[in-house]
Image (cartoon, rainbow over all chains, first blue to last red; front, side):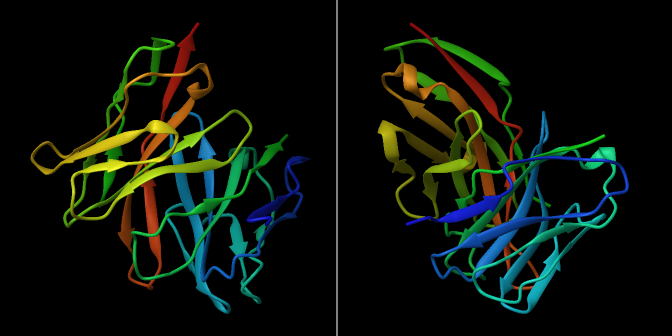
Length: 115
Length: 116
């Protein structure tokens, strides 16, 4: 029972490089989302998806792209990394959309450093 | 827009002592409220959640929280803290999004240290 799996756990990028953070869940959850966690700021929503083929922006989407071709996977792409994107990234999923009362399952995070 | 305030950045308690972590929220409708715990290097684990009904909710690991609408608060409590409770605790409010999704707005967290 893997839950939400994120890879890699750690990554160092140079400014301007691109990369994809992977997120997969095996719980048949409709809803998936990406958050970033920065010291003193809690977690902020980057992008989310309410189902395969449907994505939308959260509160801090600039510099990130997402796609949702399958129910299971929700990768986050950094097109041209910047030092301001140094953060810990969490993927989260939940069973249903349209209702804010379902608890999320979080992955263990990807710690990204951009130098 | 919704917001969550956790006024205590750090709290230190002795093992066996009681604990209360404060959370105040701002939301225009009936709030969906959550407490999560994060151990170092780990993701967030759901402790408990409030949707409606009984304002005192029980969670895992012996935690409970009380929803007080008049005070816009959702404080987390535990009668007797264990050393393993040392972690960071996040309060969050859930809201629906126009696109059919939902969003959790998190507080900035409270770091709990437990002294033996």
